Image (cartoon, rainbow, N blue to C red; front, side, top):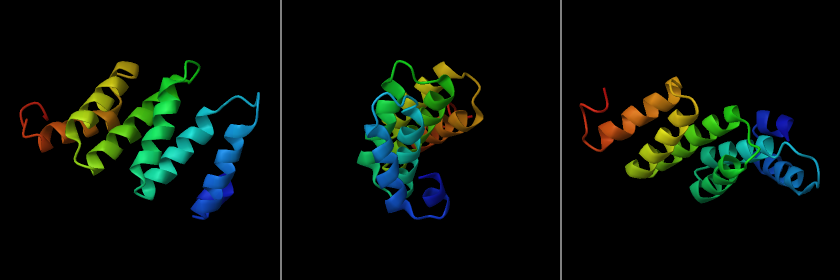
Length: 122
């Protein structure tokens, strides 16, 4: 799946990452969930992106590093569709995981700016 993703053969990468999720007892579901979300985001398939990332974020055993990048990408997905309130919620949730995450701070500022809350975006 990794090689197909790197070679931009995204349909095959999606197929293989989805297959990884079906393997019982394999653990580490955060890896295919994150990359599926990332691929769907790149393909502008935001419903599928959100589904994967929400599953990643909501998993009790999901490592903090994956939760923060998942929340960051989820916020970007909401921004792409001009859903600024949802983008803000995802960014704030990410900042609760890692308070000074630069990319998430930027997404939060961008969402606030697009909502016309210019002072809050600084």
